Length: 301
Image (cartoon, rainbow, N blue to C red; front, side, top):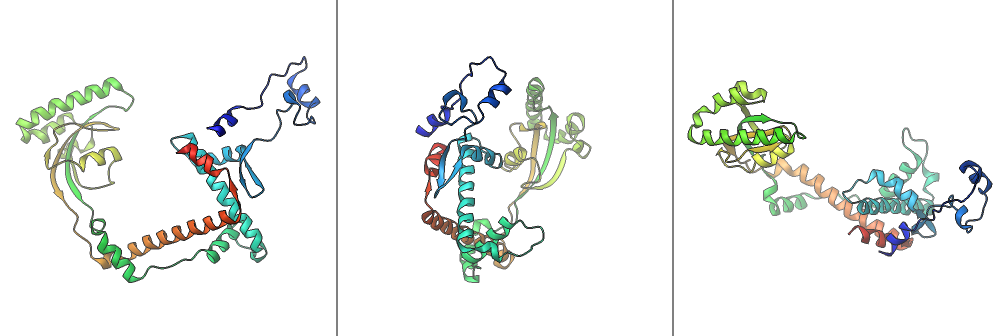
């Protein structure tokens, strides 16, 4: 990418001087930008603009700490987008003269108060009708039921996440125990008491009824895919390896419309507001020309 090349070509050179770094910096602190080796203090480059306002790479770098992502390009794109939105809103606040309308407000910064007032005025806040909610309920029946739940027993062979040998041994022990339990399932309670590293061993490994989200995520994802009975393989988690037996499965009952109407209304209201906000920001982007954002987002694609 062209912009990537420009970012890598930083104006850094070795200063060939007999003076100390502090003396050299002092002597040349007022040099013009075009004087080559003495230009280390020049402003950070800017490839992003909103109208005539430049958003520098330094500003984007500072903003990136609030936009964590798997790839630095994505973090940079998210940060750039956030700074563009902020600048668009600030320009519109200034155009409408909203600062003069904001009085003393406890605990609210002027910028936040102005943005709140601007969005309250300019972005429609539409409450969904009962008909809207009913239609969504009928079109998405799979979303509205009581939580599924399972009744679980387990035997834990504990091993720290960073203990490679320990985890290999734990898996091996779990596999041997599963092989024994396939022929002697009545021994599960006894084996739990003798072998499990979980406090539940005194209850025969009973974890009781579980709903999604009640255990660690990696354990949760796996056990809710199991069928009733003894799992044919050890279930891995951050704690080690588990021998798992599913004693019962219950599918959550379908909920009635009146049980979920408020939840649907809140969801649809949020969706509508987000859509209206996106349309409003697009209008501001057309009013105040934004340059460079497309290239930054393209690098993250």
